[in-house]
Amino acid sequence: MAKRRPSGEGAIRKRKDGRWEGRIVVGHKSDNKPIFKSVFAKTQKELMPKLHKLIDEYSNIELSEDSNMQLDKWLDVWLEKYAKPTVKNSTYNGYKNALKYVRPYLGKKILRQITTSDIQKMYNTVKAKGRKKPKSDADTSLSDSTLRGIHMVLHQCMDSAVKNHLISKNPTDGTTIPKRNYKQKQILDDSQLGIFTEAIKYYPEWYDFFYTEITTGLRRGEICGLKWTDLDRETGMLKIERSITIGSGGKVVIGKTKTETGKRKILLSPSTLHILKKRSENQISEWIFPNPLHPEKPVSPSVAYSKLKEILKSANLPDIRFHDLRHTFATHAIASGVDAKTLSNILGHTNASFTLDTYTHVTTDMQQNAADIVGDFMEDIFGKELKPWQKESEKAEQAQ
Image (tube, rainbow, N blue to C red; front, top):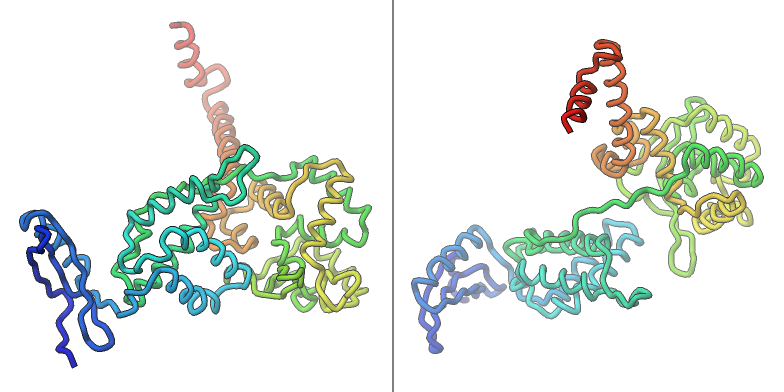
């Protein structure tokens, strides 16, 4: 058996091609043979800073033999061994699709040889040319959100490689990706929400469903997955414990909530509780909203989506997405004074800061309202004719 050389041990030499090489031990194979990492320079003087940096980078690092595998293989290992057992099937498929953008550019590269520069070049290329089906103007660029998704998945994958001693550091760290850019949420305003509430009355088999949605802001899969055992008729507390998705072939799949935080309890409004209590008097299924043709099954999210579109069209309302009903609920709630922490718990967000970031446009309006209130009580103090800010403004206008 070969004698085990300690990690971090290095050596320098001048190669036949005239370059200087600095080499250190960064790990060991199963037979104890060392795994080397090298840096190169034209002169010994230029080499030494590179070698010292390499030694610092791999200090206390012990890579395994698997660090020589190609990225393609590691992506497969990570997806099956680390991702698949921990996420929903739909999320797993999303991870696979995101990594399809990575494989053509870096898939054949040795895992431990991938640098931050390699990742950045791949991001830049994918951003510019990644769209397989060009837009109408032949634009092949990916959206910012798609690139962020690719980065998020690859970052997780490479973090796992670090923990498994395959690489010394995560090469996605230090890359530049587009900042999160939330689009203005499309919601129903006060007037439109009133029209929608009246419109669903003409769909009695769907009234309870959509009334519950606009007063709770549940995700589409969550409201479809509600069971009568989730409702406490005395307290009005509703448990959200599962989500319905559509699998391959249009099959309805019963799974977990989107996140662990998504598993939660919310207190229903009195009107919503009243509606569900009346509905429970004639229940024919374990599901609060069963499939009309097969009541032993939950209503399909795709059917609920189609019905929403039909109702919106009949009422001449904006063609919003189902998820926009959730935004409608949240926007009206926060504008009415519901604090971000409480709303975050109701929506099943990971934290209140995410809720605030998502509904920035609402909080901005609330800040303007607060500024107006401050102006009002300052006017009460100084008097209408003695507002100092107004006098300063008048002086500036006269000076011009």
